[in-house]
Length: 260
Image (cartoon, rainbow, N blue to C red; front, side, top):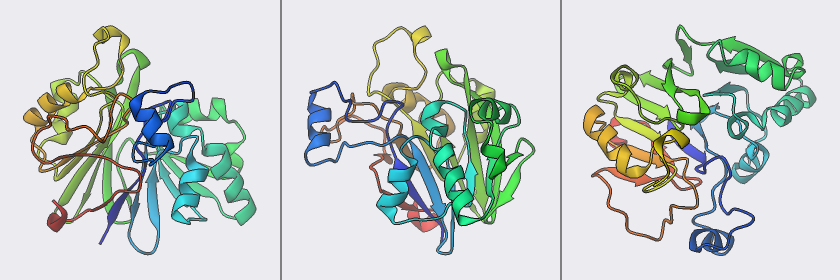
């Protein structure tokens, strides 16, 4: 059985913020439930795993799980909090003597190559716009609005009778952008705040009040919110739709009907 593991659940800056003494950051430094590395997940099947995104906390995330080798990676977009760990991954590929397999939409790959031009010496970069199959998962991707930060991509993964969607960075999605999410068994959606008061034109990720409207539209069987800033304190009791869970670092979710 495949299992989804949350390597990181934080927004671009992570939690705690080094400059901040708010309640959430203070708790993150002590008991640590709110401690959030940059958002990333892996899909494990007992013999290996497929990761999604490789941010600057990649090395620590691998160490926390006792993992030494990552072969395959999907990338949602080329922002630092999603690709900042690529040089370390490439270095591990070099030392361990294998080529990594990176899969991303075609327009994302040149952006990665411009930032890290030497990566292709150790990592194969494969466009996946037309869909791919990895570890038995049929994977499709599409562009989603990332607000003031431009665009990102979401992934829809299907195996047997189970469908789930990973969309960590999006806001104000159109009917067309929401369409591949409809009826998924699981939707993993980025929500940086519970309620973000900033002007919409300055924002880049849904808040939880807006995400409730998304869920009402696409009707997933279950949803998990990730990509959370220090605005979100897991000790608080937020008003959330039914079958919504806030992600915690290390959380494991069975990717099967019994896990719904």
